[in-house]
Length: 280
Image (cartoon, rainbow, N blue to C red; front, side, top):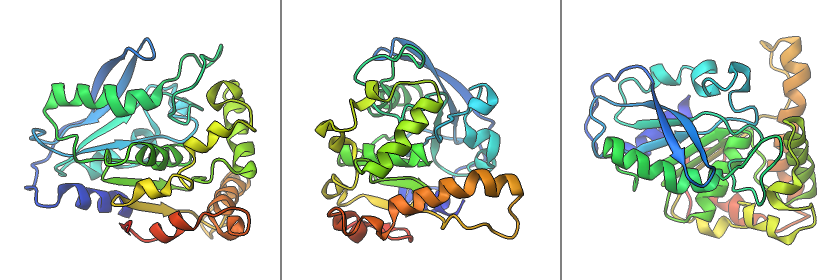
């Protein structure tokens, strides 16, 4: 949770200390773009007026283990306790399995209509301003895996919209063939058709959703990107090793030096290290 504390520091610089807040509040946000009501859990500080906003995005399952009743941040981490005394309004969207939090080109017969980019950058901020009078000019996104890719991508596609973007065990080089295989497998495993998201693998418009290729847009945004080596730790269970290590290795390969001789990814490498700092 050190990164979460770091983003809190970035967002609340100069702000007063908050008194302990309450339990998560369920906010139902109507998404006109998706034609659906989206559940969003909110961790509200004691005084949310003019507080900054942190959006916590999920991995590819997006709370599926809980039947999408709550996101993984609430069911698998201590985020609620961590933010109890922080002067930050935290939004945790529920659902969106396999969506990569983007606007799909076409509705999917299984997953439905996905317009998550519109929801996260337009509809949710407007609702938070109306409901809590928060300061959406001080916003941040972080997430693991799928959510981390979305955090970097949305920050790059909407320059100046987010002050901080963080990614854990994600694959930012999403236009790369290796990454495309991973993304497609993730969508298919949730019952969706990946071609309905960004078109076929050779569609050049996929490059518009690759934060490496959009790295110039991230200047001035504080970034955090981290990934493990995919090697077992002493405390890992056999199940963790068998299921998690290959995924972590894949994320490491996607984020690491493998791409240096295949594409010009230097801009993001110059902007991001495995330490929290501001892109220059």
